[in-house]
Length: 89
Image (tube, rainbow, N blue to C red):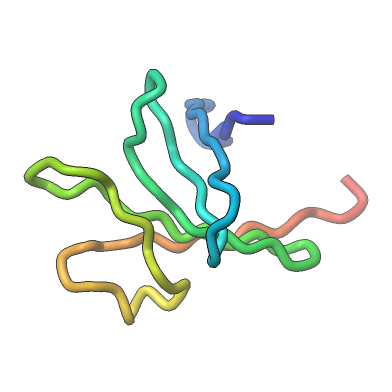
């Protein structure tokens, strides 16, 4: 329920949802430390996650502000994942 498993290498990571934010925010954790923030959106069978990165010179990780990564603040390099539920599996 609070774990992501990457099917390619079976690596795992924890996350937590941050209530009350628009767009919705999730934090990626390693040993309870926030290492990345992301925005997410679930519509029907599609889950979009746009993940930001920790600043290269330290500081708090930032959430992207939009799912359009072309609009990202220079130097932030967000990654957009679009996951689709497989119906009937």
